[in-house]
Length: 445
Image (cartoon, rainbow, N blue to C red; front, side, top):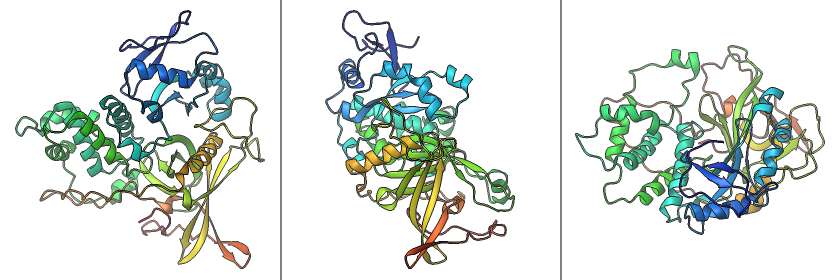
């Protein structure tokens, strides 16, 4: 493989095989000299990287090695051997992806240095080393720009302003203008949330919003001045990402059922992204870039259905690929989520099933996070006041992208009657196109 090597690389003992490449969060590629198979463990490689990049002692806890491709992303356990798992990659894809045989044969994983899913947010803000903070910042910024972390436009402007401050230095009136920022928008601002397709465009009214470079410029003018160090700015960026329920999570592809009925009568499955982390589970609509459901671990119960376990060194997010429970091996594995809800003022139990070939990885990661104390997330810091829009700017009437949209979920609702559970008949949705819809539930304000 070819790539841009940086620094001295992480050298191996004499007799090593040809160098491989490890990709850093900022896009650089670091050459790695690996011993012949089975090769070093992930823990050994991480120790070499710590020396090659001159990272502080907390680095092995904050960072982890990942094998990633377009079909599968896995965080390696310390005992895993990357070379061995690369050889097993086609078998893992057959088990954990929906790729065609031809696509699986062409899929090649890359070794990446990324944030450790099990590193608490609170510990992250205690880090002082500038290089380690920069690596975490680069990964978070990449997830924002790539749309993996949906954010509201005002929050995106504040985050873009910090990135702008790091890139261009302190704000200088007259020198920094909307015109000078316009070419950099794609590198500073995350993509806007979805606009609801054709119907959303037909129902939107009012004046057009101001150009994004104007909001970015106003936020840039509020960014910290010359006294702020790069480490301060990296930490400020990460702190603003922490309220996002999916920050620092592992992400899995999946699908959920669409609600029945509706004006167009569409059914079938809706593609979703499932984010699993130390504090809970979030289901995201990757097309519209907004949250459908957020649950902390005290708010949910889960069940894995239809996964088939395999012998051997199964790989998962810091937990082995758990042996599946009994189910239909021919159908797609399912992760069932149960949580409390409300139906016409009556408390109900809601069941949502997520179809995904990686459901067993989700289940194993949920179990591991709860064992590590994920059932008690730290209290969230008080939200910062949103800057007031300038005179003449249109009011933002769109709901926050992090606000769950339970009305878009096809859940099965049950109410307890004595010792039995009775299923609640879902409401007719054919006449609800212009209604507000949706009830209240966990995570919905």
